[in-house]
Amino acid sequence: MAVQKIDIEQFLALAKEYPVLDVRSPGEYLHAHIPGANSFPLFSDEERKVVGTTYKQQSREQAIKSGLDYFGPKMRRMVEEVEEIISNRQLAINNEQQTIAKCVLIHCWRGGMRSAAIAWLLDLYGFKVFTLDGGYKKYRNYVLDTFKIPFDLKIVGGYTGSGKTGLLKSLKEKGEAVVDLEGLANHKGSAFGNIGLPKQPGQEMFENLLSFELRKIETPKRNLSESKGPYSPFTIHHSPLWLEDESQRIGLVNIPKDLWDQMRQSPVYFLDIPFEERLKQIVLEYGVLDPEKVTDAINRISKKLGNLNTKMAISMLNEGKKAESFDILLKYYDKHYFKSLHNRKEINALLHTIQCKSVTPENANQLIRLSQLQQQSP
Picture 1: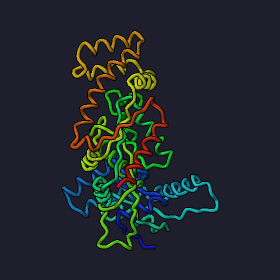
Picture 2: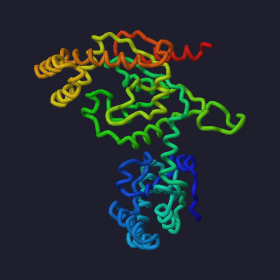
Picture 3: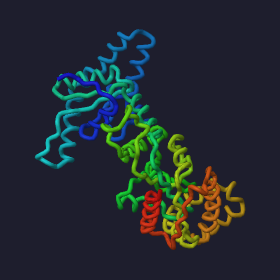
Picture 4: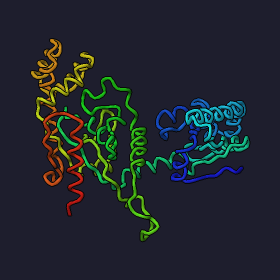
């Protein structure tokens, strides 16, 4: 069987069925990778450094020889690891009637010698092998292009404590297209947003994850065979996609500018929920967190919160008066969000206020009804 080099669209389509082997070094993979890819390094970080130095200081030929010294002893183990990966996928399917083909997808940084070497080995053994033309670098271009696609965005807005994240889950359960930005970022978007959550991904990995989710949502509504002119990925018509209203920065990562610009120009469905109801929700969500970490978070916003409010919020928290402490914080975030909400061009035309009596997943029904009515209107 011959190794086939394929483009990024074909590669990712096949990745839904077959394992992806990222043959870059462990450090490169850890920095960022294609979601779902297996780390399958040809060289360790140190070995990669040695081969690279040899290439620069001696010659290409000598670097290849150095690489072969590392590659040779690993060949059998690599073949067996791929067999194990495919076997595990078969077990995951748990269907004896459906047998996974001995097929793998391979990529390195640029689609060069690293992927070619492992592709040769696995092809020789009898696997069907596809390699990514242009490698991970081509994939990154694909990721960044994702954020230029014109999505039909619907923004879920509302002051802190409105239950927006829970509302997104409810919308998804009702069949709506949803992407949870905070879920991908492992951060709830405020000074308290990282408490009790896993470490955030780096910026590049966040973009990869976000692109992966957006591409899953992508639903062309036109028949391409009937369309006139060349197909462009930037003119696709999409079903409505719900996102939560966010600052561009979520903890340590940023929403890509192209997508952020679209968000700021999209309709905002603002959940107007009484302060007292939102305060109850905040106490439920944040009242269970480690008081020391909450105190640290309060201190981080002390300059904006003000010295007196900071002292009062911490003092009440220490006394177990969580509602009184969070009351101070919620009023601060209400002012902050109001400013951010109205810092949009043509906000009056974009803003759609929905009166809600309480924080409940059922508020999703009102969002859907209003959105559908607006789609039907000329």
